[in-house]
Length: 70
Image (cartoon, rainbow, N blue to C red):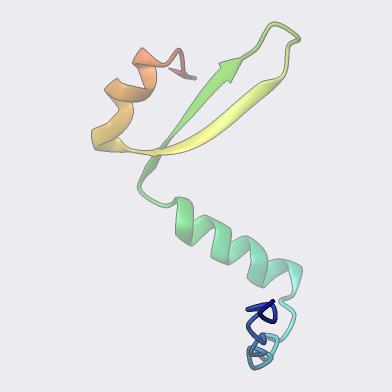
């Protein structure tokens, strides 16, 4: 019988962690990412609200999925 054909795993180099952001920096980053987008909502049978930040050109597609603009 031949020996198993297991390959040895090559370890990936560890990525350095980014410095933690303050709450104000996190808020600014979120607002920058959401800028220029339309906020759309969908409420499920249990009353949970799903929120999506949608590009303006995709609003019609999301409305077809049952989302609405408040």
